[in-house]
View 1 (cartoon, rainbow over the protein chains, first blue to last red):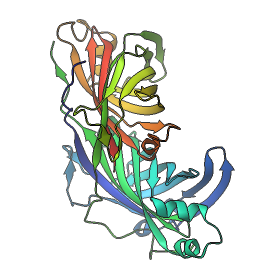
View 2 (view 1 turned 90 degrees about the vertical axis):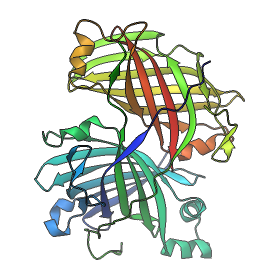
View 3 (view 1 turned 45 degrees about the vertical axis):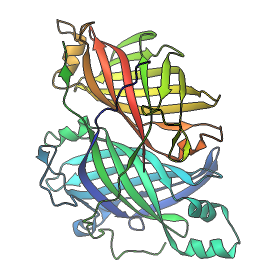
Length: 198
Length: 189
């Protein structure tokens, strides 16, 4: 077996969005299913005034990313389903976000991933009637969240984003054991362009 | 639920979250086991590609025995199949299931989606153009990206389930057929 060196890798920052999940909320709906406790909720931010909708923005203030115009706008809709894995310090998450750019183009993102909070998570989700856990449940717990996300759009201007496998590094804020905020930085996985050796 | 913030539009951050990619392992798969040409379906061309069983080695490029404080994953891919769709907009989508058998007897199941940007007119090149893409002595190589998750009941490797992973890879194409794929797998942290 030939041992090779690692392939080059690059994360290209695209944009960020931060959601207050207490607003325009429908749900949560909970169920105990094989594999864990599932909670789902949706947020129709489109019902809010434009100025109140969550922002899609470039944290560096860049006007261009990946040789294209940077994506800025608002989040119109978000839906997430979290499956709390028993006896574990993580949860599976999947969901969908619908973005509307400042120039009124619609982009949908679908994501799956994990939410990790370490030991505080396990105590938060599994303990009942324990004074320490009760105190923890009153507090806001920040968890790491990592997702894979792909985008689709019919917009010619933003079509470039469809061709990238993207990932999100973020945080979920849990309050009273439920997601109260979600914040993500979105990156595209990028590598050198196609090369032909023929 | 009480509102934590004054409104749904949270203040802009100027600092990005930490973004670490922690290297886990690599593998180089021979994909010449089986190929089902499902054919043209809505959106593109569907083809199922299977790896040769027990021929793909899972290894650490630096031969380290531990990673992230846990046992490094070393073993063999016992089975794997990619239900690929080459879209007519020049994007290849991967949908893979595979099983790893570690050297110490653990079974790890993996599933992932991925993306293979075939470049401008890549779809046409793959399905119709002459000459065929890639030659035996000089294959056409292209970048491919995957986002695997893992499942196992083995206590030594349960830590893998907590991570969303990223795979950075290369596919090798000869006569317009994918012959092999190599990946480096990282955990997002």
